Length: 175
Image 1 (cartoon, rainbow, N blue to C red):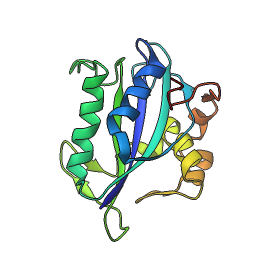
Image 2 (cartoon, rainbow, N blue to C red):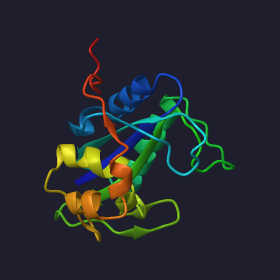
Image 3 (cartoon, rainbow, N blue to C red):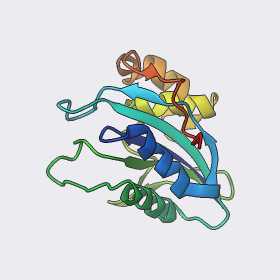
Image 4 (cartoon, helix red, strand yellow):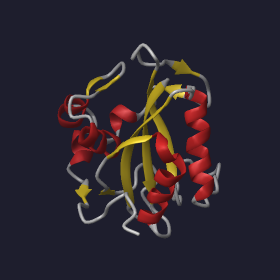
């Protein structure tokens, strides 16, 4: 069994619907959903604002690579087309595997080119840390420390001031 934290982001088209597509694609593996936050773009700042959220998922048989494949499947379901020229460019949906824990509840570490765990820039991104705190207030990012410390005193602290909670938006479909 593995548990994972996945970060969801969208800034093209029906942003909320793209986040919901990710949740639907992940299906029964989803344990907990964060709130939705509107955030300025990160990296390439000449693009629309993002909606971001975090989900905690679990599956008896999933490997870390399975979580990566499920993330990519959700992106495809939302019509994501990767543009290698714009690494931080706009997208219908971006799903990142942030951290994975194994059967023993120990964090999985990986330095593979396609899957670095924990995510190498998660500690810098308020749009990952703040929604994650929604679902795990006492959570820790493996190798970096407490989420609350990272968000309030770490490199993401300034960015945290720019996050807008969007409580009127729910990841669970109302249909």
